Length: 287
Image (cartoon, rainbow, N blue to C red; front, side):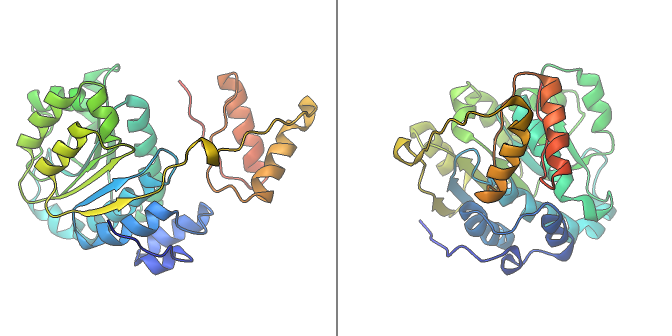
């Protein structure tokens, strides 16, 4: 295991100006523990295994180093890449997570002025639309294993140029029955690559996967939240004051990450707009 003191700000993590500028715009003030520990390791090119739960900030922990590497190598790769290349491959268990991560990466990459292409592919939607999105290749591909294999069999994409592989929520992927698909995909990847594995738990299946995939990895294990650290509170408030109270709580407690549930898609959109007007960055996520 490795332990790194959490930096006071992102400028201590050796990130390049376009990424730092975007983090400032997004009001990211201080790296989370997983970001503080994983980003410096990922930037060196080392393999990494990290124990991190949902909500820990792990998407930025792997997305920012991938973007920085691709930006640095883009001029060289443009001369040598085939049309159906992938440079950074992120495998996830669900379509919702795939879309969420892809949206996050696109947001982080705003100041690269469109030079880095990110595509999300998953089941349940038209494969033809995804094949069109992959035409000409992509710098970053966020995918569920089953749909990725479908597109590989259709020659829509190849994995022989992958430089960085991320397995996010590896335990969930295995629990959902993707063991065979993962084994097939790993065989299609180049031997020389950087591999980053993130998992909330480490059952025997995940441990076996790390031994097969990772080369002398750095290990990070964050302390998981348990029932004793979870605080539940109920506030009684008039309907017209709910947004004001929510904004007050977010600012008073300096909540950098919050997941807010509402009862309808329309309510979700309206709440995000109201929070935005109050200077709070909010993203909408619904079916």
